[in-house]
Image (cartoon, rainbow, N blue to C red):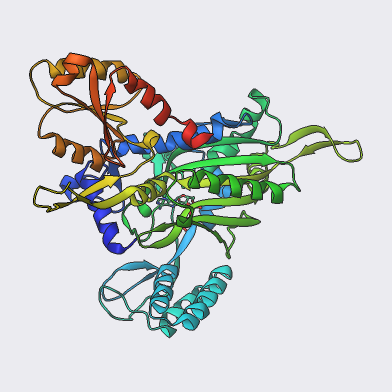
Length: 495
Ligand code: ATP
């Protein structure tokens, strides 16, 4: 995959109603995007894939939908008010702001591209150490030593490196003087932690158990890059798995494997994914790994799996004064109940937008197709763009296409559509030549097209056309449902 493919994916996403810049008529808003008529379907289906695999497939995992606003003490307890920041640096000439670590990472990539592997490794090690030590002076000095210039002004006239808190704040309450500062949540996880006891008690949950949640999160990213990869408003899908202290290593390994399997089941090829261990652990973690996806611009984090110890629950216990304990009646090897403890937590956290982007990139194919040889043997070449989504994830499962807009064909088509639309999202279209309509469905990733022609009136058959092979078959109308039941099924991904 290359940068050029990425450009094509981005413009395809816009042209075919998947993703639009937010408030585009006002020239957009930095790093905020809207999902269009087809994007929202794909996004909903991806979210459902996650939800079903977590909640429906696990008896011991339940869902939650916590509010975006939370008591401000939540963020004091979680460490976000004091610690959730990125190192930033400004170029005095262009007035542009950068993340200091990103500037250094870009330099490392450049060294690698130029074959200067030693220099790349050396800088990587120095960067890791500086981040580990939170050493802002060292970050600045690395930028100077490696002669990094601002891509806009081309100068090396930098400010010092400073920390910048990523949380958006707003005020709650109608009266300014009564106003209390509240934050837009920067992660969904804290909504789960503060509800730990509510869910555990009312659901009579026994450890180990999990709580899953999907929802919006907000981060005032210093610099937004690569389309929907780094947004200021995005969606997370997080699951916190509560376990007995001391069992975190085995559960961490368990969830690493579960999550990697979940990705590879999409069928895009396991070489597109890899694990990347964290060098700098977040303030709450005792082990952390990313699942990276090979985006057209390189391997980048799509999901994080973190062993969060009892950090969050202990902090909430400390700040709220409420006991965050669980009574474990199971017996240990000495026949004694494990008793009261604050559970440990393994977290899996994936960005829905990054998953969406990965899915678009992996599914996007440009294919050269050759016509059947003409009488003089000439073969015509043509290209088609096709999104090869797993059928269950496609925005539309089936397109219903009467060959002509007359002779009773639309009536038969409508009847088929009415029968299918309760179970499958169907697309209906009667305009344009059939070849053109097929191409449009390919571009949306619709796995099946059903064409109704004059023969359909005579013998109750239609043509089904398969997106990936472009094979067309004559089948009885009564067979359509049978094919969809087998091909468009969650069991293909979940079983
Ligand atoms: P990064 O290092 O790329 O900033 P992170 O390590 O801060 O990401 P986490 O806090 O672990 O990310 O969040 C979990 C997941 O949320 C990430 O794996 C990613 O998929 C998603 N995510 C985080 N920040 C953003 C963002 N600004 N835009 C889109 N998705 C995001």
